[in-house]
Length: 270
Image 1: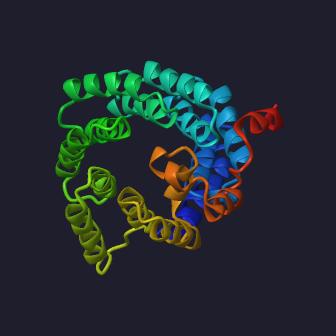
Image 2: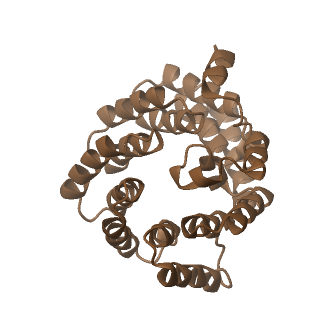
């Protein structure tokens, strides 16, 4: 559970800063902790730490990649994409950083452009689950539901038993109208939760795909209680667009410090 691991993550990053001094990698780790709910999801602090990391270690690809993720959450998509591309340039053989570029396109709603990149990535690295995962999300976002289901099923298969992308498959099944199969995913998640931790975000994602608004919102609120690190991604996640008009959804964004429009957040930062 995030509530157990994040304090250790944050403490380790702070200790590294104490013993290692001003190093880009340690500032990047503190900024990364914000993505996981550390420092109270203090986005300004997280961006500040990652900006310092980039200044101290401009060739450290992860600092650029993690800064890109925070910028996506804050809705500053052009900046996020520029940082993600810089990270991929610095470490061109790292497939995660290439997928990170595609992910920024997904959250920016540039789905056709992102799908072209995801198609190339799955051809170049066919056994890497993340390539299939981001391609499946793009396909689902553009209404190619059966192709999305097949692609996300391949991601689940390649990820060898991990539950990380199974909820995305369940959500895609729901959007495809394959409700019984989506319910099977929920049942599997419930069964797994009896022997290992399954984040509430996972259930809410599938419920949103099924159009079960009340259950999706309740799952989001439970994710807040459990400090589920994935919760921050509700701000840019297209899968939750149908819930954005709900007062409870807006209240959750406010708790996360993500209710302020992106242009105003950028102005505050400057």
